[in-house]
Amino acid sequence: MKSSTTATGASATSRARRSHALGRLLFLGPGLLYLVAFVVVPLGLIVSYTVFRRGRFGGIVYEFTWENFARLDDSLYRDVVLGSLKLAAIATLIALLVGYPTAYLIAQLPKKWKTIALVVIVMPFWTNFLVRIYAWVVLLSGPGLVNSALLDLGLIDKPLELLYNQGTVVTGLVYSYLPLMILPLYAAIEKLDPQLREASANLGAGPVRTFFSVTLPLTLPGVLTGSLFVFVPSFGNFIIPELLGGGRSTMVGNVIRDQFLKARDWPFGATLTLALLVVLIVLLLAQAWSSRRA
Amino acid sequence: MRRPRLLYVPFWASYVFLYTPIIVLIVMSFNSGDSPYVFEGFSLDWYGRLVRNANIREGLVNTLIVAVGSTALATVLGTLLAVGLARHTRSRLLDALSVLPAILPDLVLGIGLLVFYAAVKMTLGLHSVLLAHTVFGMAFVTAVVRTRLTHADTSLEEASRDLGAPPLTTFLRITLPQLAPGILAGALLAFTLSIDEFVIAFFTSAPTTPTLPIVIYSMVRFGITPEVNALATVLLAVSFTAVIVTQRMTRLTESLS
Image (cartoon, rainbow over all chains, first blue to last red; front, side, top):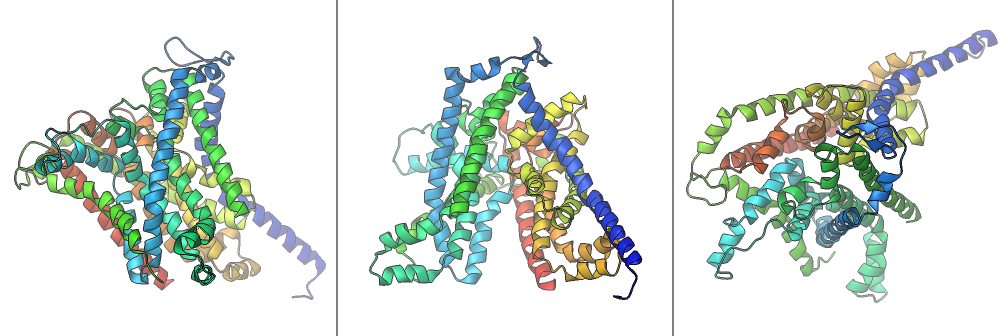
């Protein structure tokens, strides 16, 4: 092959280059076109709508204004955003406190049990989201199982109002996203070299000290990933607050939905959506930054 | 290694927490009484009503049309894109773009698509839901196939290219067969996600063409009946079976490949 003339060699290279360009177009073209049309353009539209006015009967009037951003400062919407942040943060913290020990124990199980334990954790996640939320309505309702059990045990005289408060919303959020916390934690703990813990113990550290100065710092990326996986869908959720919060604890997702479907104020709905996105982007960047450092 | 006793408390609490509502739901679906909350005795009545419920049947058909269509589209687009990203470019920006629909909150994606459809004056219906579900389905197919590609042995592809095969031939004869298990796993993921998807369908479907999750949502919101419990139990059985089958199948395909 070496003896072939430079001319054919050059044409082969140019042919290869041409076919490479063709390959690029063939493989990357359709998918990227689809992503641009159905993700980039929609996001661009949301961002651009934030600086326009709403029409009198809904719709957009293409007249520049900063009004929508000024409205974000309204205490009503500020409280909704802060309230959503709070509920999502509490749910994330509880999921972490329950999920860490669970993931830790799963990682110590014998290999065969490990797989089973993980599949059983993930299984509820593969069942319809609405069905799982609805199950809590059945469980916590006035005549439901929790109340009747408490009544039978004589702990209470009349059914408690267990549904439709912020605690129920947090319960629903933790319930829905706990598997998303456990999986990355498990992956991080599983990777941990057990010798490091042994070394720590040999050097005289107790289990608590070993945990806080060896195990926890080394699994911090898992902690952050899991927290993000719980926080992100919690923050923008509108189904759980509606079905379990009874509309009394409205989160930012509900307000966005209502701006688009009920109030038909698309510019302001878009502004709230952008606010939600900005919070999430900041969190994603923080996570990326800390995992690069770890 | 020693396992601290105290860890067993949150460990078991997690499992009890995750399964109690599901078990209660299943038990209540066999209730003979009218209450979705209080168990009075065993019967299969609600399952009978479920089968006769026209809304649910229609929702199921709509869901399946959307799931099959969007999975087919997502699998083709996602596989091509994954190969393109792994073999034809080194752009981290494009990599990030390809996973964006999976990371974006479904509320943002749903509203973005609603705004987009309105801007291009597209009427809402099953087609709009199908196109919307393709977006996130594609992101998951791309991610799964992409992972497989980065771990795949490239020497066969290089050999094919060195022997003068055009990209399409190399793809069809070498890459595609190697990727088959990954593509199948990605397609199954896209299909399952599409069947369960509520938020995006909520924003992109017409009131006349609800998918099953939307039917469930309205049933739950406007008066709960044990019929919902029966439907929930059927769905649980289907998805549990699907998870177990997928688990078995991926283990099988992994041992074959």
